[in-house]
Image 1: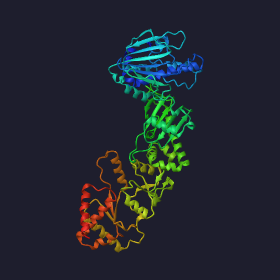
Image 2: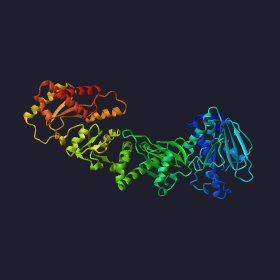
Image 3: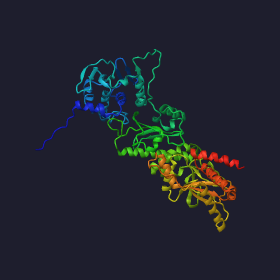
Length: 607
């Protein structure tokens, strides 16, 4: 037998779910109650603008009042207010949105960009996360309306009686519970107001019953009702952008530059993204992107809207069209969100390109700070790389900035690079002495970036300056005769015997730089694997050290004499030459340093 029925929701069972699971953080309740107050003010202004209400010319305001002794927190507005019927309709019906109904009713009359915040009809009930009971005192803007008092302890029952309010608007009184007692602290309330309500559209005033204010003390709102992102970019000054940055992020370091987003179609989006100065030259410092909807704070660093690599920036994004979930804490998975994310990425690429083309010198001065962000973005988003690959700069050891097409390429399309200007100083000197160039890639992210470039720019190979000698550093003198090969072989065997390091490969080469007795090269591929393993906390286990090769410079004066001295001194000098090569490539271990010092003393005694 076929049977139809209606699904019913029991409020007695629904309240515990709302109180415990709807919102991720308790402090969100204050955002929801204050946001409702903003909606009430906005509704009244909208009705006045279309002649549905008589304007009383009273300045809009919202008051948040803490009474620690009475254990109450009160939020009061001078907005539209409610009649008894409206209280029963909007407050006692869970998930019935008065804001949504208002928008639908006046969609053909009121401003389409209404700024109404509420949508789900659940925000009011967040108050019960921290309250034993909640009271409402309200008076409608409508003539001849009577004040109404409503109270409920969060169960399925409530009481309505005559109210005491004498002016239009609504007052919500939260009787704070033992579980919510942290919200009876004045500093805690100020912190929550700054976090969630700092840019709400109407002035919010906070006071405590314990305040001892003088009559002449000027009242100041706790929020900024006109954040800079609402202004047109052409109307904003550099000073305003910097002041807003300080106000929002309390950062003593000024940003390098910024992007002002101002989009009306195909979605509404405003915001400012700042490129901060990186204080750590090795690590990528995390940024902070604050997401707003109609000036109401939602969350930081929501990756669905802000691509991961853009989270290295600092900024604010206000997008009323975001598909928020019912708690307004997270986004629903929606195609529009992907469009917004792509648009933001494109705007960032456009801005970087504009600075590169029009302010090249400034762009170069920013490069050390912005390059980790750009490289991270390229690795995470190949479309971003395609947009900005021609403006990626590479700093040479001679201090010049070059694009990829301008890079100094050697035989087989090799690009030599430096990962540490300090550790690889000797190799840099060798290159400079021989009019050779290399680029500096010494940020941690460059370990990944060079591999990414090799993948994207097929045919180009990046080689660290200490990975191989290369034909460019070898002497131009003719070689290959049998006698020199025999001498080189004897020299290699001599060093192998003196050093006794089984895994060390030893070669003899005539180098252009004659004053260097020997250098060490490291296998590029193995070293990269070790670097990545180190960055990720040895996730691949204790990988063996990359293969090292000792290159003995046969044109060096000391090396030429080494075969003619007695065996004891020869072994000492071989070891000392090896030590010098190691020092030029990496730091000595404690044991190696101790041996080096003692051998240095013996070498001096030979004089």
